[in-house]
Length: 445
Image (tube, rainbow, N blue to C red; front, side, top):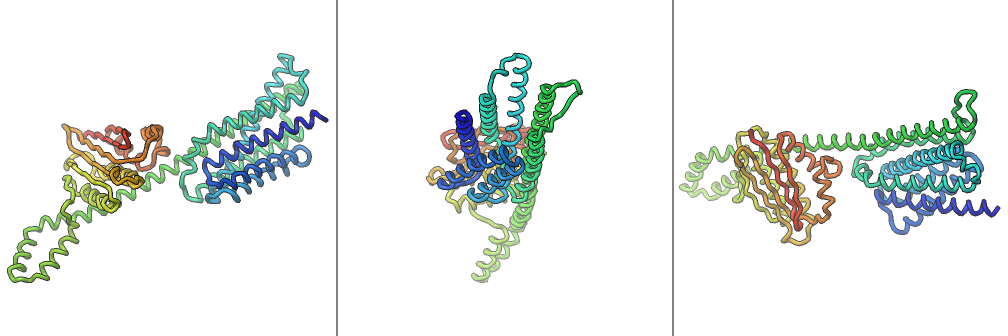
């Protein structure tokens, strides 16, 4: 009796550990208040206790279903995110608990069977000690996997459409249902059987080995499905953004072309203005000049890089920088005749400036808000360097940016990297004293 009570207390400790680990795991991806955080811990703990109680002493299907619904309900009611995102979080957590729990439990059972048959040191152990060791082994493995997988799941929970979260969650719930059916079969004594001459030991070993194989298969399928779907989504968003940028730059090119026509016809305009002045038609002169300004989008400090598309882009970005009180300094020359397409010049410069504007906007000190652009042709290479103020300090962030995985560094930087690779160029990123520097070198021949 005393032994049963002690085992009950040990199990409660493990359930509390599972609830604590699960709560912290969900906190990494979903917002929750301090008060609700304690309630979530209690509900998770209650879910583990009630689920285990019904599985052990009543109906396994009822117990595991109650556990899943309690967990899902606590997630939906108390966490402060999109419902679809919370459903996906519940699906991932339950899948990890099911797969890793089954895998570790079967591995431990195989180890015990091996020791019993080969080493002959387990037969004297009582069931109480075996169960505690099995629970401890299972908890350590589950907690370790959750700790390992949590940082890698951040990219999965970045802002996505609601439908995507549900599409990712339902196959995970299907895997959980399949594992629940396998566990229910195991509780009914349904085992894999080998040849007729095999005894119980070999049949048990065969059954646990089959569970290990199936859980490994499901774990691999889950891992590749979740991260594969995330990569497909990010690539699609990257393609959509690139196409939107191309359309935007073409629109700028058309708009800026009007200014080129104005410059080309400047002589005729001057003759017309001179006639109006000689006849003292002051209102008409004023109206004529105003129309010239509107058509050509002329300003005194308008950039002139040698590429009308880039000029149009810089004109728009400079206006944004001025509105946000960001110091703008530009000294750029872009080659007219090269194998680099105008659109690709704009993809590079546009994405760099978008990131720079976003970084400067986060700064509070006006003196730290600056963007400096320099570019030119060095021998047979186009060299572009952009500096901007930033609040970044963590070197790990910079390491993520240097990697080829756009899911960690952002779609904008990925577009930059892919454009550089398209022309077999080089990309260098530096962060020194709150100054973010990006340098690009592209061969022109």
